[in-house]
Each structure stands twice: as structure tokens, then as C-alpha cells.
Image (cartoon, rainbow, N blue to C red; front, side, top):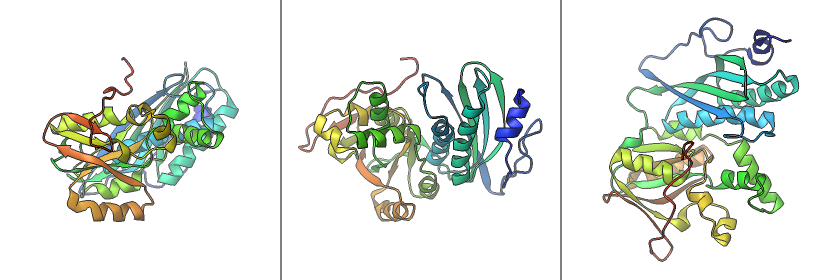
Length: 314
């Protein structure tokens, strides 16, 4: 097979489960339930910017979809449909087979129909648009944080950026920890189920893609509030505490964990749904009236920190 149409037909045209018309026509047709809204997000992954040249193509297929699912999770939505546009420097059937297997492994796990996209010749880049449903007027926004809200995060922070640093030869890790960190970098698990169940019980939410500090600041700016974090309550590997390399936790990107705020009275419910969805969660601080971000050590002393996370144009 040598044409883009044959590539689409062979690798990306799969049976659809919740779509009126999928891959193969000029546009897809999807049905949206009554009293629901469509929630849409797009992300682009470019070689040597978002992933390294020799990244396992199966892992890349998974990650390209997973990072988009994380955006829908942060909105409290249920992802259902995706389009995939991919630019390839040449046709490599071994690479395409592995990439599509990773992509559809993620799609099948989270119930996603691939409904269209595009293929082109050029530098390797992957662009996905993800679409899902959300109950009318129940979307989670960045602008809803309230004073005295708990600040929560899922999972462990800093693993992915440690994985990248180890692959680039900038950080030496024990073999077992290195494997864990690279898996976090290349195959993140979007917190879709938790995000969907949070929609009526939290005030604001964002997914951590550019680093805890930068993404929390998006919530603080949109909500016109401040925050106080306890450094030792932020979930991370013991290696980080031992080495004091907190930049991985505070400024490292690619975590794709959820960061959300909620009233203290909702702690029991949040802990219940976290257990139900098998999701690790931690309270790491509180929303404050003072429109600044403070991070304190275990003795209550304020510490200095880099206020910037990942920025393509910094």
C-alpha cells in the first residue's frame, strides 16, 4: 500500500460503536444525547518537542490519545470521539502498525471511536481532536475555585519529567525507578472516570500538563484567588525528597494528573469516588483570599520556587 487512502483503510478504519458515520466519508456524523453538551479539545505532538525521536511507536500511539482524554477528564466530561491527523516523513508499515495498535489500545480501554482525520507527508507530527459529552451546565471550569477550598491532585507528580531527564542523560535513576518514570512519560493514564464523577462536587479543575505551579496559576488567575501549598503533602517519589530536586514536582510537565479544588465538606464523597475508580488522590493545600501562591515546608516556612512551567515560546 502506497497511498494515504490505503493507509487509512488498513490502519485506522475500525468498527465504530457510538457514531452514526465514521471514517471514510467527507465528514463524520455523531449523535449527542438530549440535555448534554459537546466538549471538544485539540492537541498536537511534534517529534523532538513533545516526544523523542526513538520513542516506542506503540507508546506514542497510546500517549497521543491519552493526553487528549485528560483534557476531557479535567472538564468533567465523558470522551467518546476522536479525529487523528498525522504527518509522516515516509511510509513505514512497521511503525504504523505499532502506532495504530497503541492508539486503539487506548481507544478501546476508554470507549473512543476514531471518526476521521487526515494524513500528509512531512515531519512527524500528530494532531488529535477529542470530543465528548457533558451534562448541560455541569462542566468543570478553571474559574470556579472558592476561598477555603481544598486543593487536590491525583497520582504522583514529577515522574514523567524525571523520565525525560533520565532519557536525555541529565538524571541518573535506579533501574526500577527509571522504568517507572519512562512509563509515566510515554504511557500516561488519563483520569477519565474520576473526572466524570467530580463534575457536581468540585469547584474547579485542570489537568497538569505544563507543571503543577503553572497549571495551578491558571486556576488562581481565572478564579481571582490565591493558594497555599504544603510541599511535603505533594505526592512524589522518595527520591525527590532525598535529593531535594523539587523542580520535577513543581515545574515538570507531562504529568497528566488532575488538579482540582473542592469544599472541605465534600472530602468524604471525593475519597469515596477515588476509591471506587481506583485513583490515588491527595490534598496538597488550600485556596486563599490573598491572590498569591505560597509554598511552605513542614515547619510552616515559606520557600522560594520557580514560578514558570513548560512554555513552547519561553
